[in-house]
Every structure is written in structure tokens, then in C-alpha cells.
Image 1 (cartoon, rainbow, N blue to C red):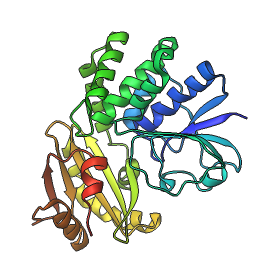
Image 2 (image 1 turned 45 degrees about the horizontal axis):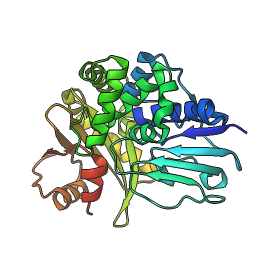
Image 3 (image 1 turned 120 degrees about the vertical axis):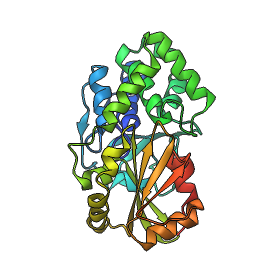
Length: 306
């Protein structure tokens, strides 16, 4: 039976690249038949990375079958995985997020969760010397994943090890990290073709905070004006997206990669209350700038209060 390897819904670069990396390792090193798949269309940055490194886009799946073997990467949250995930045969989890709970397995499995900025950094360590056998595209995907998740080392999730791994990969590949990251961020910032609802779901995760169901969306960009110019229509779309997705509220943080700050849209009194309680700010309009806030995992989610 072929093992499916996948990350979370609304796949970003890490949840697109890491399944490809790990499926290569299982197939070529461990001799285990494996296939990388995606739980949705990759975002614009991830699509750029696939094209840049000449990697075929993995198949997109909407469901999983009872009993099929799967490896979960870049998440351990059942809300970000297909319905029925607990009926599959989960053989491994590789992640860098906090432990959420709720996944069930048929027996003991390999779980690796480490406090690093990127799943691909963990895979670099797990693969070890066998990475020398990897083709250029696999190493390129690994480098791209880490540059993306660290925002080229600007994110507070970045560790010295993440940076050292990037430097080693870039030297091996003979590429400039800055040039690659700049091209990736430009691709990520091109959101003109997406509807408001698609933008709100593009990089979003579901969380229950003090009994309130929140869809926490983050858009990382070097051109925040392109998104903030759509502020009114984005806030109007939040109502329908929340209703369709079973959430009480959508929170949208627009991350300015270059200025290293976030702008939170504030469509109503509930979000105003959340913003002021969570970030110690004073909200006087329909948005608020949060200096230094770059990471949903490390700075946004742990701070949220309702």
C-alpha cells in the first residue's frame, strides 16, 4: 500500500514542499512506497517554488480512506486535516507546532515535534547523510520551505539551527538566499487573482479561544497596500466566510515582511475587544498596526484572549 504524505489544508510552502521531501526519502532511502499529496491548491509562493525547482505539483485530495497509510507533516491539528483522519493508519507525524491533541492512531508511531521554525529543518536532521543522494529539487524545496517559514530569518520563530541549515543548503546548491527569498516573497504578494473569500482562507487556521471559534488568517507580503486597499470588501466577506466555515469570527493579520509588523483588520466590537485584550493596543478605527508581530504560531495564537 502506498503511503500518502501530506500537510495541512490551505497548503503554504512548507506544507507543499515537506510532503515532497519526505515522500522522496521514504521511496528512495527507506524503500517504502510513498506519494506526496496536497489538501488544496498551493498558495502563490508555493506554486512559484514548485516551478522554480522543476517539481511536479502533487495531486490534490479531498478525502482519505479508512485504513490507508498516511504520514502527517507540518501539523498535528485534526481541524486542518481531512475528515476521517482518525480512521486512517497514521504511521508518522513530523511537525513544529504545539501539540493540539485529537489525533488517534492504530498503534505506536514515530512522532517528531521540535521547536524549530520549519518542518523541513526537522527533515534535514532526520534524513542526515542520506540527503547527499537527494536531487537538486529536493534540496531546493527544503531551502525554500525554511526561507518561507522564517521570512528570511525575520520571524521570531527562527532558530540558529534553521539559519545554519539554510546556509548549508544554499552553499550546496550555489544559490543566493536573498535572491531566492525575494522572488518567493514577490510571488506570495501577488494576490490580485484571488477573491476576498479565497484570501481569507489562503493561510488560515482554526482555533477555539475561550469558547470562541476563530479562523485566524495571515497574509505575509512585501506589498501590504495591495491587500489593505481591499479592506472594506475583505471585512464584508468575513461574515460569510465565518458562517460557511462554522466560525464565530475571522481574524485577518496582514504581515508586512519588510517593516516587520502586522495590521489587524477590525470589523466589529468583538475583534476590537480581542485586539485590545490580546495585544495591549488601543483600537480607534477599522484596523490596528501591531509593531514586531510576525508569527501566528509564536506571537498571535499564544496571545489571543476573548
